[in-house]
Length: 100
Image (cartoon, rainbow, N blue to C red; front, top):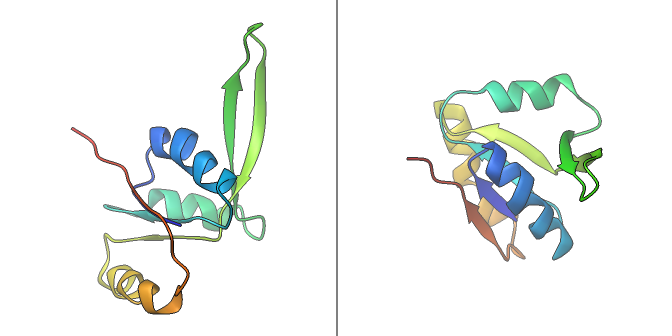
């Protein structure tokens, strides 16, 4: 799966759902490079933390692994992203995170 966008909603809702469907997830930040930089600092885990508030009020922190993360905000990142379809012949899902 490929997700265009790296916002909190996408990371908290769409990424876990896509992982449950099977396979790995690639994230592409549309502007800037803050999330790919954050992911690079977490190397080699390739995962990000997500907090879930349980019904009893406790907070559970989980690690969500991803296959890769990049940016569309730089020319080399856009070029790499446009090469993905050819490299992923079994790509089944594309997620899109939109903001206002």
